[in-house]
Image 1 (cartoon, rainbow, N blue to C red):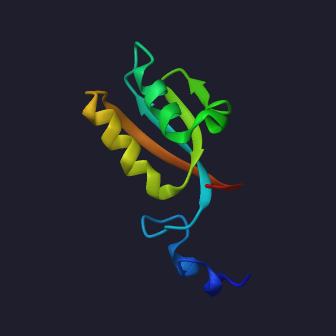
Image 2 (image 1 turned 90 degrees about the vertical axis):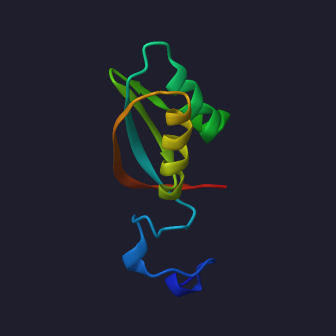
Image 3 (image 1 turned 180 degrees about the horizontal axis):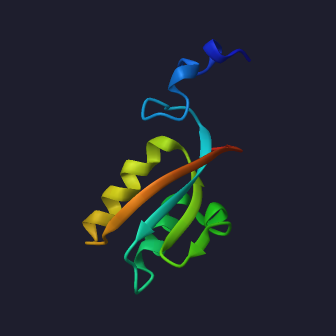
Length: 99
């Protein structure tokens, strides 16, 4: 499949940006204040059981794999539970596909 045959179609300059609505996944780190593990449960619930199994718990947050367009949704869920989000870092694109 050629890039312009993607569904929905998008330009290569949009990959990895907020305009990326493809199914490509990225490793993403959420730095949060989470003394009770609530943020981890919220993120795990969002990504699903299979992806939650590969979620990495770090000293001040969580690293998981998801499409770039899901980041605002997770931040919104965390904020709704009054969980402070200190930063979100998008790492490298993975070989995974969000299905």
